[in-house]
Image (cartoon, rainbow, N blue to C red; front, side, top):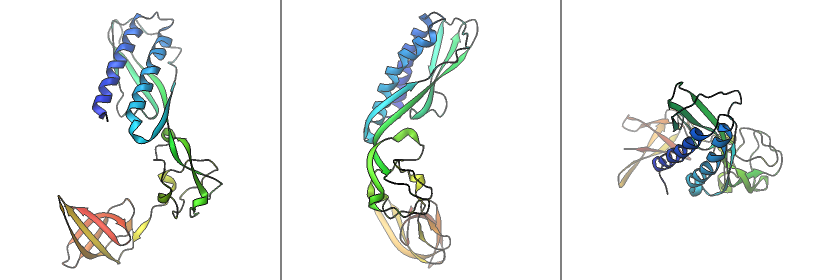
Length: 240
């Protein structure tokens, strides 16, 4: 599996080739040359970066540069990934002129659709509904369509309460599921402290509610207050 660093290095190399084509193209067809040269390379990169995630196929939609652009001739174009850019969903690639009479910087919009199998609703589901097995079915969905992770395992959905409504055929995302409360303030909680190669268990009284994905505090019998992560019914874990 390739690391993020190696993927970014490959992308920079690919964009360098695109930049060379961009320089040699005439002003009239520079944008078309850029787009044609980029699509195949970005498609290959996106597929490589997601092949480990149960992806069946990747589609790339290349946008257009602003037709009003009139870019000055440039002897050196530097390709780059804008800050916080992710090759997932709606994204963009940057090109800037670093050697020419006039410095310029352009962005080419791209949309990367990453398809894989995940759960979709079989019928309209209202917020507050408790999901049963008949409510969902696996289908191919665009995993990159939403920033929230698509739910693929039925066991992670059945019995959960919807925080938001779902329309028929809509992909079930983690953000659709209401956060679970594993324990309430004042209840007795099992606390498991884990370190390299060992774990220590004890009990304490919850100071705060144990909400899924949120830190909680528990007071031990000795009076020490510990902060950890709720992981199940009346159970909290923390790393030493």
